[in-house]
Image (spheres, each protein chain N blue to C red):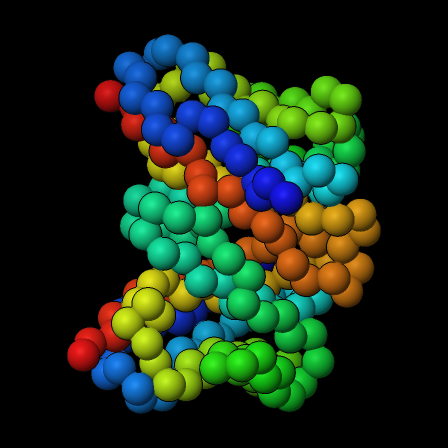
Length: 111
Length: 116
């Protein structure tokens, strides 16, 4: 089985930095994904980590520690448009490479 | 290039009726996935097609759900008969060939199903 935990809601100020954490317990781990989803829209891919360490992509960075079952998504220079739900998802090689999602973190960016 | 498209965007039906959801993946994507999000819950995997073959259908809730992908292009997900607990948003996603180390799934906007 698998268990993915992330905070339900977070609030941050425009221009600030926010870190969204995700912890997981799973068999057959084959990578961790972060997706962004605005209300009523499709989830869009942000990042993929399979090895330990930090992956940086513009204002967004994602970190993974496989030994700790832990990841975070770091958003810098927050903009109002970053208000969205952020989904942590784990891919398992023993389940046909399907994604197993957490419930998502709803981020509100305030002026 | 068109993204993953889903139809209808919203369907409202009565318990016991039948609904068919359609997904058109990105052209050339062999992998097609169906996911579902019930209100208040996480997005959950339903099944995975590679071309026209069902690779993994371990997430299908029960035999009221039937997914097809004839010809390996678009896919349909039929719910018959629909029950109240089937209400939710059904997402389709696609990706190129063999997943391997390639991480990205492209999602559609989802089909919202409301069963009354």
